[in-house]
Structures are given as C-alpha cells and as structure tokens.
Length: 162
Image (cartoon, rainbow, N blue to C red):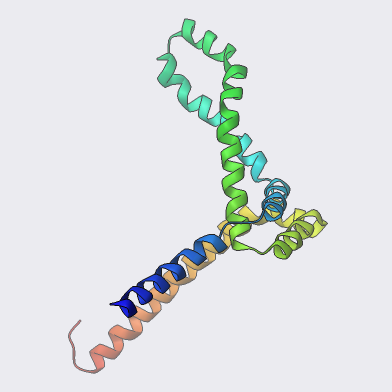
C-alpha cells in the first residue's frame, strides 16, 4: 500500500512540475510584451475595435438614423471600454510567446524584428503565407491527378477494371 501511495505521489509531482515550469518569469513576460508590440500584434489588436463597432452598429441601432447618430458619438467612450480586452489580448499573446521561447530566444526575436530584414518580413509575411499555401494547394492537386492516373494504370495492368 505504501509503495502504491509513493507511486501516486511521484506521478502527481511529475504532473505538477511542468505546470510550474510553464509560468514565464516577469522578465520573460516584459520581453514578450515588447516582442508582441515590435511584431505589430498590438496594432492589429487595436485595429479590431473599429471592425467590432462597425459590425455591431446595424445590430444595436437597428438601422434607425436617430440611434445611429448617438451611436457614432459614443465611439470614444466605447474605446475606453475596449481597453481591458485589448490589454488581455496583449497579455495572452505575450504569455504564448513567453511559454514557447526562452528569455534569450525572445530577446533574439525582438532584436531580429527591429532590424530592416525583420521589419520587411513583418510587412510581407501575410502575403508569403498566402502564396506558399497556394503553392501547396496547386502542386497537391497536380500530384493527386498524376498519382491517381498512375495508380489507376497500375491497377488496370493487374487486371482490375476501373
């Protein structure tokens, strides 16, 4: 029985250790917040507010002009209400980076993105991502067609009717 309890205790201790190790240090969090800002994520999160307000406008105002005018004048007040959500996005993004990279790696990334080549990568990365995805889709379609033809041919040579 004591051996069984020792085994369970050791197992629970092992399960608890990774959770404690995943908590980033304050310095890692500060560096990660800087990285998130350098990468432009903070600007992207800030740019969500007008999109949110625009999508809410027809729902809230019900396309009534008298309500729309008041709605538009309340935008500044709503921006203040958005701040906690914005801060939460920054914090969670920073935590994501701080738990996936060491402090030294975070510093290296931040330094890289401050360089001209890092800034260029940030500017064109979305386009590159879309283009590389398209390359994968296009070539996969060609591969699928050719492989289907080869497999069909090989199966026919074995006497299968396809």
